[in-house]
Structure formats: structure tokens, C-alpha cells
Length: 212
Image (cartoon, rainbow, N blue to C red; front, top):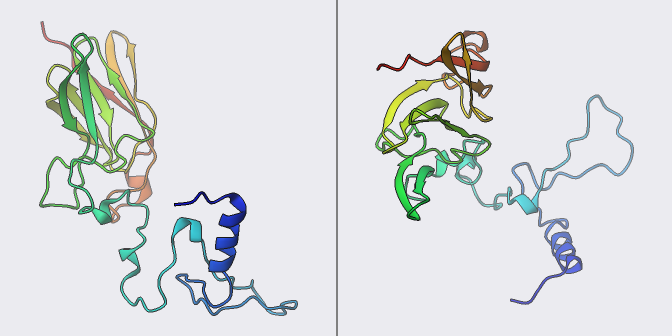
């Protein structure tokens, strides 16, 4: 395929967006008035973004969600790829081999599948590895997980009540006790609840004391 320079690409977009060829969710025949608008409110401008591929063919009458999903991180297209969709992978740096590999998070809306990992599960997130052999990590499913650093087994998990916790967890010690801090500011997982009913911001967990 020959190389397309910027001028050729701009010409293609101009051709595709010319009158009569615009495809959009709104009516492609809507036109912006030529003169001043004398009316209350604004002018309805047809939406079209060819670079984002958001248009629908004129003869398409099915549900819009077939083509465009509403920021659910790929869960609406769960059959596009076989799970798991995100992983935590532990490497043995002395041997150059994978020590263990486990899915990170789960898509609860797909009841027929478990340990799916979460699409976009680790983006803008992080983990904390402790000297006592624990790995704490957050996932897009709105949970905090504690893994065994030796084998990847899930030892504990907690549901934050909000989706997609961001940032890197932190740990600190106060009065001889260890604490884990995570940031939870995402959308509510349970839409029947009110914002004020679910904690939002920094969530702190107290770790149990290590038994001798």
C-alpha cells in the first residue's frame, strides 16, 4: 500500500465528509443555517468524527451499542478475545522464567465465566509488594486483591463499591501497626445506591498482626 502523506489524508477526510456522505448517530441531512440564528437555544450541529469511527451506515437500524460502547472498557465486546484480559505476572529474574501468572480482576456481568481478568484492568494502577510475601493490587473491577508472592494465590480481596480505582496503593506504619491505602473515586458499581452511601476518596485498611 502506498504511503499517504498529510495532504492526501486531509483530502480523503474532506471527500468523506462532504455533503451527502456524512454518517453519524444524528441525522446526516441536518445543515447549519447560512445566516444568523434568531431563536432561543443553540444551533444543532451534526456530529461526525471519522477519525474515531463513530458513524453508522445510513441503512443500519439495529441498536447503537453494537458499534459504540459507553466506556465499559470492552466488556460489551467480551467475545472478541478469549479471557483472561489482564494478568499479574511474576518473573524469576535469576532464571529468566515466569514464576506464576494469574488474572487481575473479574468481569462480574459475565456470569458464565470466572477469573476473566478485567479489560484495561491495570491501566493507571499499581501494586505494593511487602517484605512478608504479599502483593496488593487494585483492578478495574473495583476491588483490592492480596496475592501470595510465592504462588499468586488470592489470599484476600475487598470490594470498594466503585469501579476502576486509580493510582498506586501505599503502605505506612503507625503505632506499630501496618496500613494499606488505596484511592477509590470511580463510578458506583451498584446504581441503586446513592453517592453518599459509598465511601469515596482514600480508603485505608489495617493489616492483621503477623503471627509468630
